[in-house]
Length: 83
Length: 103
Image (cartoon, rainbow over all chains, first blue to last red; front, side, top):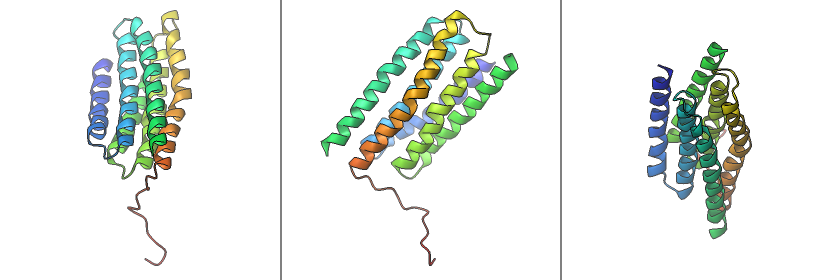
């Protein structure tokens, strides 16, 4: 029951964030959308890890979070230096 | 223990929804960043603590604590780096909703 409510609400907020990711006038809005999608994906992985009964997914969420955090910061620094 | 984790999980859900609604609706990048901090950092951390407390503390959930610490540290760093690159590439904050004195 709780799994369905989490998936529904996270899915709805994912739609809003994907709107910003696709529409975003500037590159930085897309970067912001990407970082927000990362947070949602980590939550979905953690839900699968805890409620789905597979603890390995929590490690996946951690690795995914670390790698995408690196990507975001590197892209942000690239955009800053380009001007 | 279970009720408390349910409260935390639903609170995280509400925060996430409000934050992503703010990301879609805010006028310019700076205010979107502020609302993404709500949904990304606080919402995720509250939900993860809700998951942590769900069925007591098991060893397999210890990574959740690491995840919480990770998001606690990197959430602000992401927001800061995006705001800095927006500021350095001279993105003007939008003036919608501003009212000058003599209006």
